[in-house]
Length: 298
Ligand code: G3P
Ligand code: CA
Image (cartoon, rainbow, N blue to C red; front, top):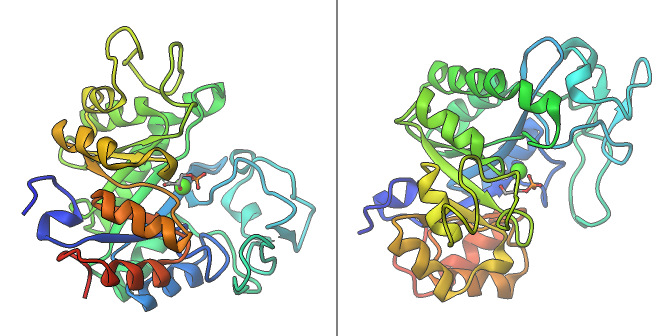
């Protein structure tokens, strides 16, 4: 039994639906989360941002993109989420357009962007044991997002506590300064350091908080530990047995993203990861069960 804190601490491999279950139903909608719960996902990953009037909403993109969003009132496509109030955002249909790269993805016509509080309430009602991986979207190269970093994180932490899920979640970010801030504000809430190949870990990286790659630390796992992470969440292309062993030796669990191809799902599972994020939790659950892992979800 692993001592690494997280859903795996109870001896269960963690299959997390990405943005709900993006491969099954349009992303980050309540219907997409419901699809993840229906197939038995043990966790869900989602993205959060702030509106202009300070609400924490569940949406991936900085701007409302034309291939995902349809205005039903004034034309808001192209606007930044943080330039719009919640009421303005609610006029946009984010459920009607499906993505060509996700064949089989179902629409949810008329769906609106949800607040984090709404998604948590829905999840607590329909899947009370699910694990929450809350990606705090802050680009440290965007001065506005940096200025709002603390407000966004404080809003997320308040929502997690209000819904009583602070003990079954990760604060998850590519911006490791978020993790350092979270360690100070809510030391008991677990933290997950996102890593993108060739983007996160290089000299001069703006993404690694107070850690300076190549100066204060020479290994990405050691850097993640230094910012207070409990989990390292790499682009799955980085994952092999050696990477998993390095992370585990450093005390980190490994939660790669976004693993969709069946053969690759099997490879990362057999490399020893603790869980994975996927657009297709149904597919991943079946494949994990087909491996020799004793911790496959029932
Ligand atoms: O959590 C992993 C994954 O969601 C990170 O990438 O762009 O889909 O938020 P992105
Ligand atoms: Ca994400």
